[in-house]
Image (cartoon, rainbow, N blue to C red; front, side, top):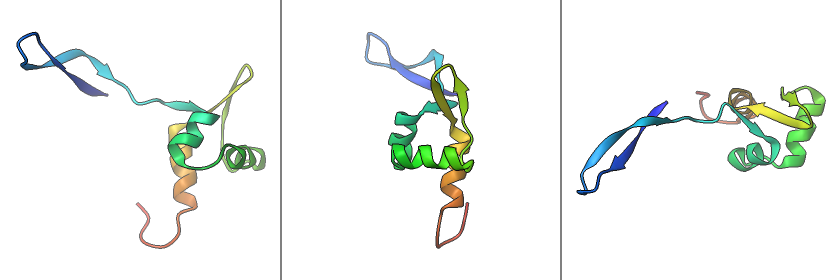
Length: 81
């Protein structure tokens, strides 16, 4: 979690008591948006078992870690992180 920055009425910066949290999991459209992988390709990866997902009702959630791992596995050239 990263602290967010706020400004008071006098234009001075102050730290807020609330924190900005990164999402732990994404719905498929958002996962496609943040990863640059198409929605249909993400569904193909899920169907083949290459991409794990969480089923909650009718929604499929993809964990941020699994999405990053998928991208890392498909990385070509250069050094892997």
